[in-house]
Image (cartoon, rainbow, N blue to C red; front, side, top):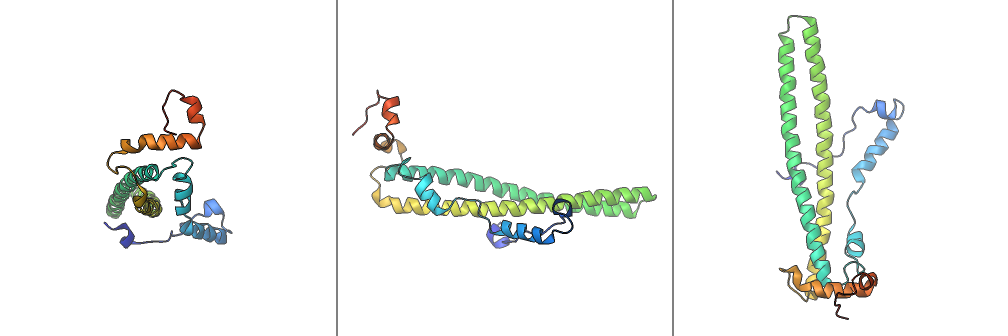
Length: 200
């Protein structure tokens, strides 16, 4: 399933009178317009200068390895959201079938209260479908933001490759160089761990 091709839907405005009030339709529109353009993920600038900043990761190799870890964490999140989305799709089919079942039972009901009960159950199931749809849109938006972050980390890794001095297979090889460089930017390391040998 290609989430990007399936749709890049804008959030549909549900019936939120109880939340915003009957006379605040304009406010509702503004809130949902804001949702459609808000970016939940970090910018490329944030990633390069803060997540992978020189203070925390003073060597190209340490930046590369941290970017790899950040990519892995986000990949796990995206895969889990992908499965969550597929569960929501299946849930919608299930709820739709249950509504049809209610309609069938209501049509064959002998007493008015039985039809009323079926109608009420169908109304509740429809609300669950709308909640489910909202969650699906939110999942797709979050996946899109995570993919942008992953792209930024990937581009950063590619840009660092020419400056790497150690292996991209075994993180251990660059550890001594990393911590030695970090001890020069963070004197607290020398104070807390004086027994550790730092290459100055």
